[in-house]
Length: 257
Ligand SMILES: Nc1ncnc2c1ncn2[C@@H]1O[C@H](COP(=O)(O)OP(=O)(O)OP(=O)(O)O)[C@@H](O)[C@H]1O
Ligand SMILES: [Mg+2]
Image (cartoon, rainbow, N blue to C red):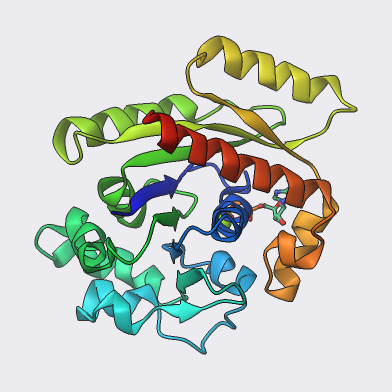
């Protein structure tokens, strides 16, 4: 049965998409069968995995027109890594979904037939707490929260934790926290260390060991439609996401989160 992880933080530009793409690739090269579901109308995750905007069926078809995800799944350069793409049409889905019954459970239901085909399903979320984000959190077993090492890093985090608590109360009792991931860590600045200390103090049980450094290769890879490990395997960025994949696989082995 697939483990479903939602990569979520309503703050924009914190590394959600970079994490979804590269953690997925890290898991795929560790022989895991991985599906990435792009729930963000910006579709950065889809283009970062090689799907040109407007050329593929998007998640919209499944959410609104009730097509099976199976018919929408797209191959990537890695055999083990598949994608359900997003497109601009998802912007409309946010409004159209409000009319649908059980609107928070649409993605969860769509994923059921795929649970035996994959070991991990990673959901990339938009930078908001809208119905698409909520669908991700309802479908997920756990949530992975990237935090950018900058001023105001923790701003909005209490809103996110309130939302998670609410989701747990009413929609998804079993939702765990996979961990908080520090991204764009710059070891030359005190600021990154300060953010790490702050997160450690506020959320001692949730901070992941792996830290993602600021690395230009991570920013360049999506323009080639590739995960960083196919773009520059020797980069620090590739190394850090392979470590993250290992850390998450370890959680699974030990049965935590
Ligand atoms: N570790 C990193 N080192 C350098 N650049 C990075 C790193 N992580 C992400 N970036 C770059 O920072 C920008 C924001 O990252 P990303 O798109 O992953 O964030 P996001 O949280 O998905 O954004 P959004 O909220 O808009 O969906 C992108 O240009 C990305 O290439
Ligand atoms: Mg994104």
